Length: 468
Image (cartoon, rainbow, N blue to C red; front, side, top):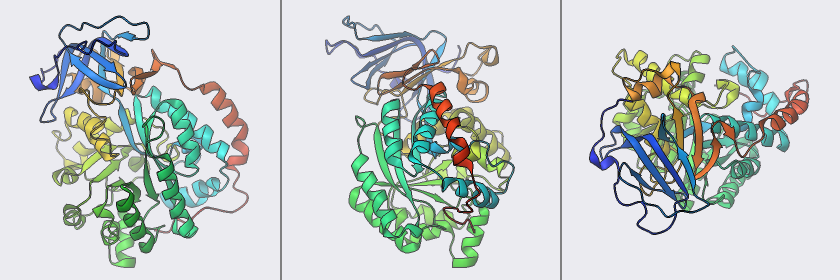
């Protein structure tokens, strides 16, 4: 494999065995994707990664002298690239149960005639099975962490813990639920924060400005500030929403968030394809850590006229993370595809093949996505002290050879199915494509048995009305 050499600061050559304790995991002979002090991406060939107590201790090309131990997991990764695990910055994992149920429709019909009527049937078991299948799909695609925004999140938290994944979870609420919805979201966030050995973090999850009233948004901002919580919300999802908000209220959805104080909190905005030029100064004045999750496949499917303004947001210092949204709209939870589409869509919308470059796309997929979900100091790079969320990608296949530019190979030639091994917190949860924590055939059998009752729309109910 040929690739530009990183700066020396991209690796550490300190003795990995200097503590005298055996490592928990040692990955050898890989090519490691690393970041230098300027966050430029490079590759270290013939690297060894040493993991102890769930954290990366060393990424080195030097000799590694480790005490022998029976429990140490050793992986020979010749021909594979070691990368930080991907982060799905916005999804609704249980919605894999609705994959393909509402195709080729505008969003208002998609919501009102299919998704929201079906979601009124949801039982806890449906949520559990959907979350299990989603976690299996993400693990197999190299996703080690996801940000979820849905209902029955106690169940999703239990599945996340069992699967071995990392997640930021938020219990969604609407103003139609009254104060109880907001209180339940807070209760969930406080009970589950830093659970599953620290792999689960939490957020407050108001659905959107068009389903949550200004007073509830302001109350959410106060709660987020009081308890130090991230807020995860859909906002300015498309240009129609922004235009409707201006016509009805004289403010864009971003201006609504600013008026409620949410731009002065840590905030994750889902989609943002309707962000307008007038919103940019508003975002520039934000005092909170603002991020946007972009899920380009869904925007293309819904034929939205604009996409997330990645370049403008980055110029403001706003992290843009990669996402899939739920599989009901996106049909997959493939963040690898989101990475490639983000690069391609930006080239198209900017009319400039130099944006996004492959290395920029990899930066969005790694450090920027980690920052978007509030974990920028913990995951997103292969560096000493970071949590050991690592994937191994096989680039020996005919569709990835020859390798002239490894970054381009990863973004534009590799596929999610090339992920061989997935590791979270130093624990191997998929090895050589074998899932070690979830039983997919059993999940699918039980899900299919429940499907007729779930998708029945004869009752005429829906959980909300989409009118924006």
